[in-house]
Image (tube, rainbow over all chains, first blue to last red; front, side, top):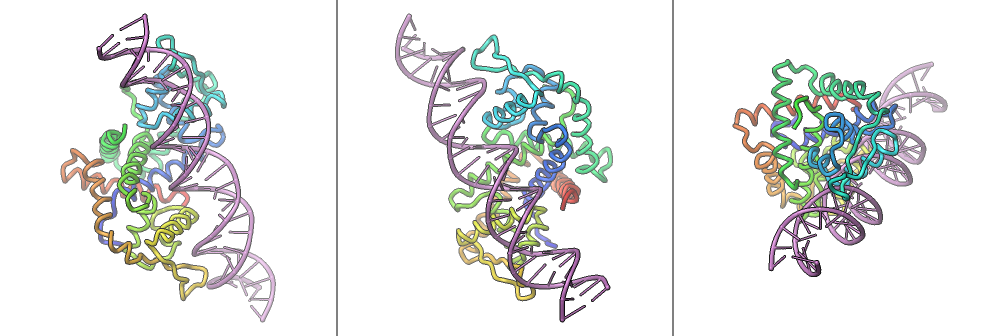
Length: 145
Length: 145
DNA sequence: AGAAATTAGTTGCAATTGCAACAGAATTGT
DNA sequence: ACAATTCTGTTGCAATTGCAACTAATTTCT
């Protein structure tokens, strides 16, 4: 349709928005959104982390973290405990309810990657795509951390 | 920090959100948002296209298109004319005001790609990243077009 | 020790986005 | 020709996100 290059933003936006739509659909049975899923997946690997570190790890605003964590708590997927070292901070833990669906939603997240985004990619290309996105995200994260 | 692979969603989300923040900052002097920019950039290459085609080209919901176009119109960057072939449809055109900043904002869009997202990428890697994102966007776009 | 600055988290606000429902026009089928 | 269906675009709504302002706790500086 066009010969000139589109800016990357066009592709990134499409990938992001449709990934969200896909994940949101899959997560509807769990009363969970794609955004909340990201936080829960981090907790599975780093249980007890503070909200500040969740924000840093996902390069996301602390107020967004606060809101997502609140919803996850209301739905019984996580609990918060005031940190013993710092009374301002919360340690966030996933609950038994979350543990129960852990593998199910982990698979769901990676299945979306492989079945949709990386469809038609060879194993080598998948690896390359993964590495490039990781580097680009690191670059992006340096803008207004 | 962790040995297990993160799902791609983590990186995509970071890239998308920070790209938006960067573009929104740069576009503030023009009273324009990153979302609106995408539409204007398409119009520069395909002047007179309908809203439906804008939506299809950007894989974006038609209501989102309607709202972005409305704002661009209010700010004097585009005009709408009812299509002669189809009274339901609008042909969308960029204005002289938009033409005046055309090169400036085009450069801005690509500068963000190169100076931030692709920092540290060789020319070959940039090309590869571009192609992979394009393929991934095509894959993503097939989900709920 | 006490003042000043920084940090962790929350809340209110505005902007963006997608979905659902809708209106009017165009197309298809009988 | 008319009815049923499909399409183009708009509007109302809810969810997500980031920014700014704020509170309370901690750290730093003198």
